[in-house]
Length: 248
Image (cartoon, rainbow, N blue to C red; front, side):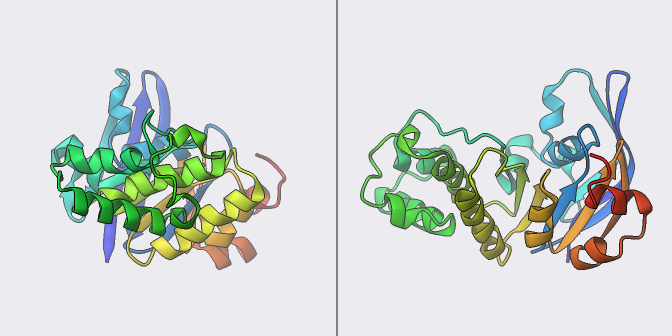
């Protein structure tokens, strides 16, 4: 089943042509890894999917992006960002307790029942592989957690509002290998219920978790294929050069 259908997507910021006629289908319940050097358009593409680029006044786009057959430009932006959640490179806990970090978005969407909130918080923390580490200190500030735990807290906060898609923008860039492994373990489990799109500068991470991988260069989608195939027999020599470390 196609989750995102992208046709002729071009993006500009002023005179900068950041994405150039991208065509792609993203399937439900896959992890799509997106790789490419700096300024290749990876994060711009990701932020197009939940309309975050619109926060920049110089942004304009052409082409179409459909989520489940609906034009995302016609979906209420707050509803879209509930359906398409995002986890950023740096963990950004709210200045609240661990419990209230998770419950914040749920309350904003109208859930007030204490028992229901407790259930949602526990389930979200379990899905993010954090429950066992924090279940006895939910009243503590989210800032008291380690960097890796804060990132999983942000993942749990995203999961609590029940999105369809989770966008990850280099979520492990500041984490140690053990924390990175826990985030990746959570991703692999979460794809059973969610569509996951991962922008990463770590080609080994892309290879470890991606069902498929897309390679961007200078704003163009060079190729997209099953991860195993791309990492062993890419179709384009530029992909081979990037994966092999010849540039980037």
